[in-house]
Image (cartoon, rainbow, N blue to C red; front, side, top):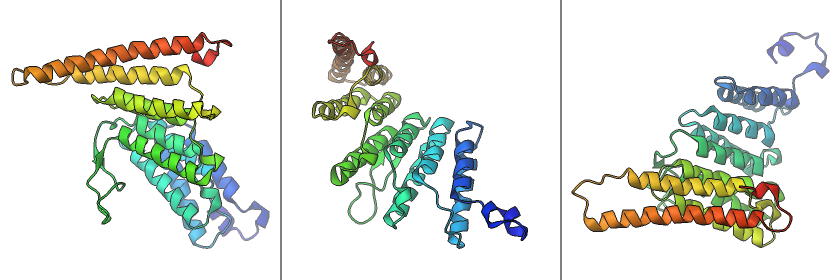
Length: 282
């Protein structure tokens, strides 16, 4: 771009446009090189700077944002999900100002959900601006899995209001949030995963073919209950813990183990239905 500006002899047809920048950003973001997400984000910021300086041709689209968000998800860096969420918020802001091409899509939402699910800091709680006290401040503390579920809630609400198929939650949306709970390492991982699984199955039974269950989502739910067992076993079981609490923990472990068996049996029964859907094969 600087080369084009510094050489008055170049033809106007050689001027870099949004397609040029978007192609490079997508290539860098998908390269999986170290810091590729930050490098792609730098190019995105350059597009924004040049646009603000008067170059109306330089406007990124949803796929460009999605590629960078996906790069943050695959980076496995601590706190990468926060950068992904900030990009999503930026997209929402651009769309609200009238930039239709910046409207987040299902792909973008799923990429951000994946960033929450893969963040090494998934079990660390931090403050969120959602659900505050009405005065603009929030004291609600969520881990990344809970933030992923909150984003899915927002996605569902938006689709129900707008009926825009471009933002419709799909099987990837639900399975990613279930996987986030499985990775969170909390005692309630299994219960939270079950809630998401029920929501997904309800949508499928209501005719939403994009939420058709498969072995991946059932396996993620089983993993979430296994996580609950590990988290419960890791709790301090010293003499200071009363017998009632110990018994409660034992019951929770038994319930999670039984739920794992039930989920596997349900998956096997679904696979045995006429048609033998390969996606349901355990």
